[in-house]
Length: 319
Length: 319
Figure 1 (cartoon, helix red, strand yellow):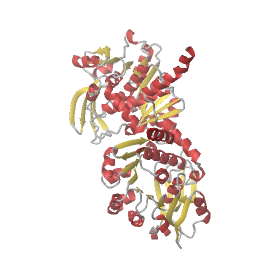
Figure 2 (cartoon, helix red, strand yellow):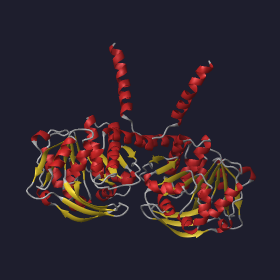
Figure 3 (cartoon, rainbow over the protein chains, first blue to last red):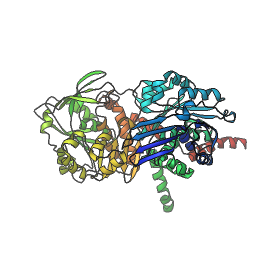
Figure 4 (cartoon, chains in turn blue, orange):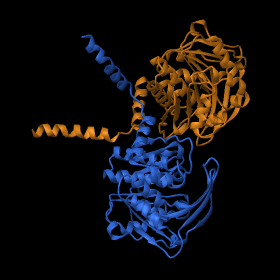
């Protein structure tokens, strides 16, 4: 899969203190998450201050960094402060630096990659990516309020050319002008995408596709360390899982939403990318099973079957 | 099952107009919902203006109305106005009338009923019920912000004597002093109940029991007609289903939450009780299956099994 987005340093102030200049950016989170399932190609830009070791650690996770451009300037730096309950945040400082001159250049070797993720960057840049890739099987786009408010026309052009839109519920309401999520999704699906995934934070996510709805719960985490990057992680894992399966059948998409939620749940357990770097595929599969335990319920027929099976051995003994 | 609560007339102003003096009350909604699964005994009070036909129509649904007291006064009347998106409402008028003198008198024939629902009434009245019933198998209590703010001590006494607390997320936060739902539930479970069910409105409901969590989605309804009584309906159906099964195993409780959600989803499709009066057990089972389609996802092993089965016939033909 190909991931295009930001690579950044984040300075985060939250209940646990100040975490200065840690690794962040939409492409970073999405790539690490996707790399759990499939090889990832990252396209982004950093400055002269970006450490080689970080590039090496991403490469070690299976992320091809050949598309990472180096500018003479500094790396994109974002600084923000979270409320104590982590439900809101304010941006203290956004230094675009190298990112201000970013125009994605997709290496020729990456242009035929079938699964493409347009990270949460300006819609004009997302369009530049779409002009360079060749016949992708599936394009996923992420966006946010900033572009919905300021770049509506460009965003509309992007939406007409993508297959999957991944979006927060509040931003989906803003984009669609509707309030209730079923109407929201219907409106989004008239804008271009065949598939809409509405993220509802601690309430999970809804997948809308071909008239079907799938409701995925959120994993109930008692102590969130840092929600930064959870949305990018969700989208990256989702597309990584689809790429690994190389199909967009309903059952694949449902599992992809669960794996996206699973990776997002790991993401928020650590500060920045730290927890994502430590997880294994086994951790992820354990959490997938935890999601099943969380969401599944038996039908009465299933219970009757189980009770029947329970009784069967006794019956045989009686004979 | 035994249901104790209010029986009322509601006058509702919403986007579809004014619905004057329609049937309402916590015991009414809970009883109709519970009667889908099990015989129901209702205890409540009405005034001289309460129509015999309404009593007859509840009796016809399987609700034993022998515990309905008749006062010389008028029936409890509530009048409220919903916002256009139905997410908030203001009370315009609350005439307690006969309900002001209500002290639940549980008929002797009802006192040994194993499943007891304490509808959303004053905690002192809930305690009066608990003093009259004999060795119930399971007691479910509902409550609301009004009692949490005004009758905290009495409510604490109730909580120490009930098995299941069904409560809205906002009210659960208020009662527990916690914000995150896992911490909220843990705090609720220290107050007495063994089982806590936190209702999250359009986001579904969470069941907490024996360290396990079950996340039930809400049924995505595009056009809600009237949310009045949905919470009472949820609790009534939940307990009715448990009573029908006569056990509180985990799988029973999970299905009970789904049936509660299913009945609540029917409730909001009509004004007041109108849709509840028209549903059949088949409607309910269809919606239960719709909930499975909404919430379930396959594991990769299951998909491998299915693909294996799909291939098997071809293999046989080839032989």
